[in-house]
Length: 405
Image (cartoon, rainbow, N blue to C red):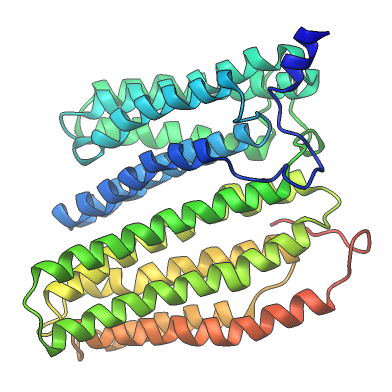
């Protein structure tokens, strides 16, 4: 009986008032990803080219995927137990190696990144399969399926780490394709079939809070980049103006997500007939766009702070506008999946940002950044009203079923 009770404690409780609470060990674990996000933005600044943008995209997808898969695992495992805590400590060590290798991942540290990433993904999933020996049989089979897919992608990660130049890029794209495709296929494998989303007994409040905390990580990195760059510059009117615009942009992004998107998601996913299906699409996929948008915005803030006036290069203009646009697109898709509606404020904001690109050859970097920031502020004001009306007028539990894209 004691052994049975100990095994049951390995799993997160469901339905209680504190079942969705994020633990201190999970927050400690997230520090590795604060470092990873910083590495990503700084690496792109050092290689501010099309090639650098491609590398940034691939590595951002990898970092997000390793984090969100861990968030899913921790949605079932109890972080207050010793065995789960030691698993997270081990993942932190591997994650620190993975994050440290990011700047040179497409050069001399590729094999270290590939091995650390694969060990992180495969090791965590194998451990979960072992833990679930005393848990739900269906859930354990689900993680066996996931382990099979991650083992397959791991072959391409490590092969890419050994390869060079274009071959590494191709192999890592294949690895990401395998991993991003697998959830949409229910992690299907021969004989075992695929996992129905009803098996993914999601603790919605925990998943929502975990993803919200990652958005805070990304926004925090943006604040750090802005503050560090500002501290090293000579303070004048232009520098102070650029600093203020960067700060307001971060505030607007926070407002858009936490006062609009997160509120909508919490309201509708909590009342969905199939929360696992909605969470898979809404949280697992769309938040990648949000994180990518914040990282690009942090890069843009540093570029504008360093050179607020003068000729605006095409690549700088693209980053200034692409960051907010990706961020709004991610929020728009999340709302579409969770609530089944297309948010007009997000849509209009994206259109305004796209139209602003036509002005880049006539205005300064700072002025274009001001336009982008004002667009985000406008979306946050309009969107708050839109969200309140949406959550008030849509049907309540049992009266609707959201349809993911």
